[in-house]
Length: 510
Image: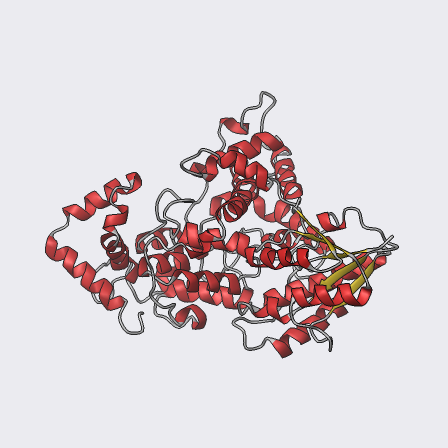
């Protein structure tokens, strides 16, 4: 009986992954490979590369300890072909295997590569669905069928019922509502700071990976060290326990707050481990639910956090596979302005953007409101090139894989899908940033001014965005009052605002 080659990708580091479900330790070979093509198809943050390579190497060691045969290809191996396709074909030839088993990847481009393996002579290829997700492709398609609008809130309610999470004995939502955002999302009080976070002791494997990344990827955007990531499931479980005990009680209150020098605040930092396979979505949701039921965590915090995983994460993944490949080319506003250099350098007088880019550069992380309402909001208002913005988000964040990054960026931040995901663009002026952060206290611009010399660029850009795209947005029912305010402005005031916006968008921007 011939053995099988079982491929494990860098974001499939779970012992329960579908491609390992029926593995034969005597006959099968597990292939895990570090390849330059995956590290450089966008210039990924060094911390992201180090996290994935270190986690891959530790996972391989765990499989070997369980008695499985692992073919681990390091980036520096002399025969490394540099691509997953090349390594799969090389392994099949050298190991003399006639079966190939893989789990569906999280990126459309890789799924197309995998489909080409169906034509490899003498090889029986099976691509299995990724069962780590809580909504299958069929589940999402059944939910989406016949709907004119695919709104996350309704999908989330169905998922709550399906998995009986935060539901009472009568089958109703705990606390009488599915959503408690009215109790969450408070502005930051003075002195708000992130509790001390976990830093994991570096194994010899991790130290070797850090040296490799230092040598090979030092030219990529971002600082490699200090490096605090969990790289094994045991370490990721410690991160989960720490979050539930120390941070979740206040997560709801401050999930949208932004504070100078605080990249994390009360956010979980679990997305890297969840997206790479070290943690599973249901175990995270159950842990948060237990904390609520034990009285350790307010319902609003537990619900807000669970919604991010059981609702938003599953919904985003569903949208990606439902709408690809055409989704990646959508550009509702025909936004084509080049990405400003300050997205890489952080050198801008807009303190909020400089701070968000600095967090990203140092940590390969910036929490979701900074991604959506600072860097994303500016990209939306300025009309930055959609593909360039999406590539930036995919490159700079350690938790970014295309299935989750693309809908969040193209759909949510940029409204480039024309409303498939969001009911209106998430456009905001400097007033929002001032209310939800302390950034404006450190900025030379004034968030209360629109056309003066020290006016916050977000203010004029906000109105200019609405005027520029009036034909596309005027009929949006959620923008009726916004356009009513614009209509009440005097013509000379409108012209001054648009002139100021043009000034900001001029040479070098701001």
